[in-house]
Amino acid sequence: MRYQDLYDEMIGGTARGSLPGWAGEVLEAIGSGASPVVGVRHPLGFLCLPLERTEEHGVCVHIWSGTLPRADATTSQIHCHSWDLVSHVLYGRVENVRADVGDATTGVTHRVFEVLSDAEGDRIRPTPRTVRCAPGVSEVYGPGQTYTLPAGVFHASVIPGGEAATIALGRGRPGRSDLSLGPPGLGAHLVPRRRCDARETARAALYAAGRLAGRLP
Image: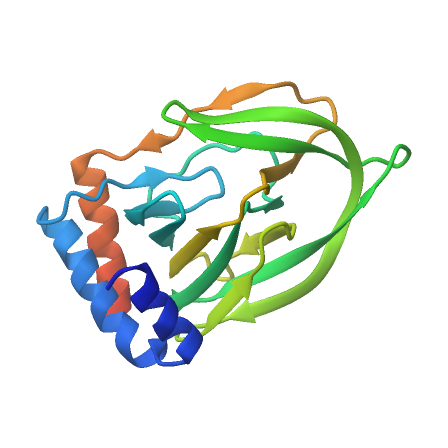
């Protein structure tokens, strides 16, 4: 299945029955080396398996686990996308914590950073905007559930129990930017996107496949 097929399944409410089997086959193919997909260590704490990328949209499997390699982050986990997210939980639980963010010149907690991604990684650029940020509405989603998040909404993903995997769909919104909140005094810098080697990619895919199939505790 490609983006539109997956989107239709998730929005149409049939993903719970169809997507686990499909995802299991995809993960097994990556784990066996039959698929060319290469994993990427994402600064937001998950390992990303990019399945489809075009100028307009993308399809990824996101895997959170303390047993898998992780990237270091230089900003906070609070961020917003330049694209609309539709996400389906394969296993585990995902807590989506929206952030209440308001412009501020006193009592500042964070600066807003623009994140520009290219072949070298993520270029983190401070903007003039400083804000006060506090936790907002929190919602928890479990296996078989789908949630959506519009572009431009600041949030953080928390994984109760530390183990989860999702199928994430993104559709870009022209004029939007990827943003992250970080320390007010942090300067511009580059965060390399660490690609996994073939062994790491296979291990992550097979681990997720085992979790999804109930072969791992």
